[in-house]
Length: 215
Length: 269
Image 1 (spheres, rainbow over the protein chains, first blue to last red):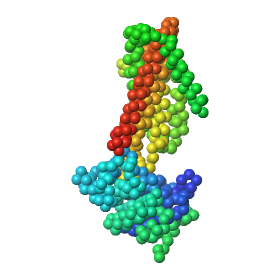
Image 2: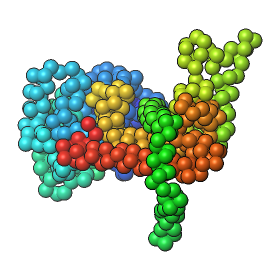
Image 3: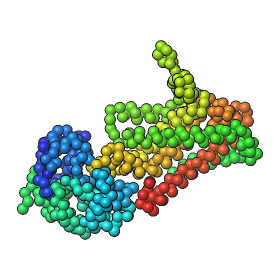
């Protein structure tokens, strides 16, 4: 469950006042809105990377407003993916697991499971330099879900992909949604993505977050 | 544009060529035969290496701090870093001398006296003064280099690492630091080169005692002051040679790390 209670965010001259939102456990929510309207800032606030000027963030019925980002059990895929340049694909999948002190057998099992789900087993030993857009996207997604987060935050994850790869990734996200049942907030500009994936939809417009009914 | 740039390159080449034309192989042999010059070469290599390593050790965290964080007093720290760069070298040496010999309080406590009598590590007019004088300037350049290095590394990867459970320190050590390998080598190179060229602060703070605090820059000064211009030029060319060898070696190390990283997918480890 993701709940925002009257969250206000200030970034320089930009101000997003009193945003409230509730996404039930296991639901896949899509957040749409114009560029620069504060969608990424909202995700960063849920992650704990940005402090809200007021209000509170609740995840799985716990007020995490003052929690460090790593204590929130979040999987985050930023728009630019932000892969780790000095790590190979396997190390990306193992990164969070090592921090969570997984045993070597757990680490290997979870890494291989994640790679299998995402279809990147053949890439495990590859450096990230030569990955295609779709492969890099899968690695970023794998890094986020390997730790089995309670909440998944995706910031325009498919925006830089070509049509064919986008369709493949949409299918993958759909199967992930069914397989993991993780509460997800997915930011996108693309209506087709919203229609295909969303259990519920929100629009951020003129600093107001509104629920959009699904036909 | 090309013409203007070549004028500068031509000037440097002509400077070295003039030095080479002025001196002879015999002059080189003569200076290398002098025990004080050999001691000077040893102290130069050691002190430059120690001050460059110390500079990088300080520059990595400070460069990261200035690059990543906005905090009260940041502007002041940023400005303080530039002071050794803009300060006249003699003033820096004089300031170091005053710092170590300034009587403090009614008891007249002095840093140098305390270091000499209590710690057993006298500094002024000894080799540690050479290292401190070199470090004071070289570190400022290393900090600026590391700052630019961290500016060019995407902080978003560290943010993602933090959402996965890293503390800020772990994100720095595990994500940012491995990416900064080439920047560290650049900072080490610049700090070493800067330390090699240091003269004013060393002369004032460490003196120019032969076989004790003499480094190559002071050797040039000492040879000139006794009127041996040939030896001064030979030592100058020796400095140029040492500088070229060390800088090429450090750059080669950087390039090798880059090539290895490209082949293995790991640029810095």
